[in-house]
Length: 309
Image (cartoon, rainbow, N blue to C red; front, top):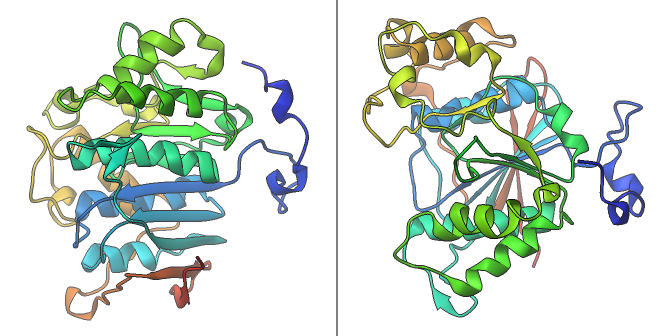
């Protein structure tokens, strides 16, 4: 899909990555969204793969509560070069077009659209692993994982802030189905928009890993397909995913996920440093924006600035 004509020019400087000579359509932003979770667990901490593999300019975590915990301290002290980690407070949406949202999951579905319309960039669910650089997709107006004969996935979304698909997708919530788990998030936009106007997005059928790969990830059979994928959804809240994972457990976990975790944590450079748990520092944010400047070989320096507006 070629870049839509109306997006080719205007505010060009905003899309220049100054450390290179290339002109990108997208900001080098990675964004994640968490609702009502106080402690960051091991799988959420696996978000460390994003700054290490992708090396974005900014990694922004949007949430509506304080984040604390050992793995938050690990994530905030990653030695990723030239990446800033920002924790932004954002109130959980309660309504869409005047209609009450029925669950925290539907609130998250709406918020990711709004975030991309405001910022643009790369949106990731907290249990998405980035395995390969996503730079090749930043030239497109909008990118979605959309496997054959399935609805589009929402676990990873790459979009220009003015992508035509985003307001059309949001407009589908005027016909909100509060009791249908995936109707407005995936079924309606696939059936009513993408099948009729596939040119709205760049379709990634396989390598975004938005299918249900849980049997392969957590089984005992060797599964090398993960090495060809850009990202993969861990389905960490659903069986058969283990619920008590940590960095020690995965050292000996005989499954493809164990292999992936060992590669990301202990083989990929720069390596993730796990501090002694008794020495971990808990970082909190409420009405503050937490900015952590991550420089190569240095512990992140914590800067607190009150959110404007």
